[in-house]
Length: 539
Image 1 (cartoon, rainbow, N blue to C red):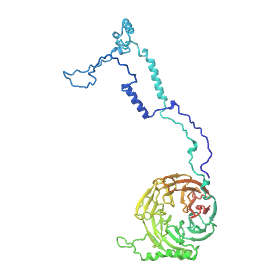
Image 2: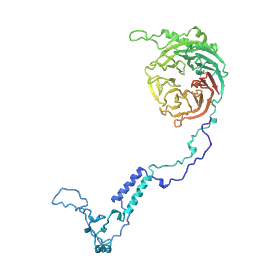
Image 3: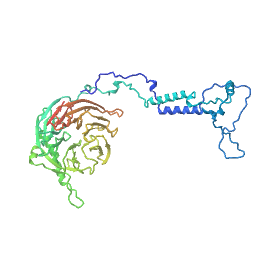
Image 4: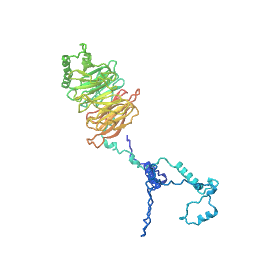
C-alpha cells in the first residue's frame, strides 16, 4: 500500500502580484508614517527650497526677544510677550453687521495686491452653513472618507502561491526499502480462545504462545507444527510468555494469574536441557541460606514473592519453578544478560513493579511509590537504565546511582506498550488512543513524530533487534503496520520513518484484534497473536 503517489496535479493557484487596492500597511509602517506627518504639520520637516541668491546689500537684522520666553513671576523689569489676539467676529460665517465691509471697502480690498492686504480674507455673511462655498466639498470628502473606512479590509488576505508538489513529503518508495514482511506464510492453530502473547526464541527456531485456555505452546516456526504444550493455568489465562535471552540455555517464562512459571521445554538436546535445569536449580541453595528480613517487632517479614516447585505433574512436563506474587502479572521483561527479569502487576499498589534475580531466587521491589499505575517496563539494551511506563509518562531510572534520570511525556491518554531501539537513543510508544509516537531521547522529552494510521487501539509495538531498520505495531482493528525506521549516528540528521506495509489477516473478536507481535532475531519476519485464536508468521 502506497501512502504517497507520484501523480502531479495542477492546482488553480495564481502567481499574479498583489493589486494595490489590497495593500494595507502594517502597524509599524503606519506609526512611521504618522511620525513624518506630525513633523510636517509642526513644521519640523520643511519642503525643499532652492537657496536664494544673497544680495550684497546688508539686510536689516531683527531680534526676537521673546523667542525663548518662559513663565516668570511678575516683576517691574520683566516685560512679558504680547498675547496673541483672540479670533475676531469677522472670522465667523455670519459675523455681526458692523464687521461686514461696505462696497467701497470691498472694492478697495479687491483692488489691493494680495501682498499688501491687511487681511488675507474678507468677512462675508451667510444665512446658513450650507451656503458656505466649501461646505459641499467638505461633506463630499467626509462621506468618501467614511466609505473608504467602511469598505477597507482589516486583514490583508494573501492568496497562496504554493507549488503543490512541495506539500508532499519527500519519502522514498516502499519498493526501495525492501526487505520487509508482505505475506502470511504460516498459520498456527491450536489455542482455544484468544492468544494473548507470543515470543520467538533467540535462536529463531521456535515460537512460544500463551492464551485464554491456560496453556503454553511451543511451535516450530517455519512449519507451524506444535512441538510441546503445558497447561499451567487452571482458571487463569496465560497473559505473557517471554524467552530468556542468550543461547547458552533455553528457558521460557510465562505468567498466569499471580503465578510466574519458568519452563524448560523438552525440545532441545540433552546437554542444553541439563544446563538449563542447573541454571534454574542453582538458586534454591542460595535462597535457603539467605537471612530472612525481620520487621520492627522482630517477626519474620512476609516475602514479596515465593519461589517454589510447581508440583510433580508440571515438573514432568518441564515446568520447574513457580513464583507467586501478590496480584496478577501482565508483563515480563528480561535483562540482556539473562539473570534478571522484571514483572508488572498493575493492580498492585506498592509491589506493582518487581525485579527477580534468577541465580539467587530473590525478588526485590525497587519502587515503594510510583506516580501513577505502571503499565509496562523495559531494560535498556546497553546501559544500566530501567524504563517504567505509567498511563501518561515513561520514567527512566539509573540502576547504579538509583536515581531518576528523565521523564518522557508522549502526550498519550493511556500508554499500552513501548519498545527501545537497539541503538538505545530512540523509543516508540503505542497507546490505546490509536497513536504511535516516536521519541528521540537525545532531542526532547516530547515525541519527535506522531502517527495515526489505526482506527482502534494499539496493543503492542516492537523494534527489529537483528539489524534491519524495521518496527511494527499491532492494533484492535485486526491489522499490523510495518514501518521503515532508519536511525543514523549523525546528530544533525533526523530519523527516516516511512510506512511501508499494512498486514491484514486476523479477525476481530469481541472488539479485540491483534494482541501481540514479535520479530525474528535475524530475518525480516514477524509473528502476530490474534484474538481469533491463531498466530501468523509474516514473511
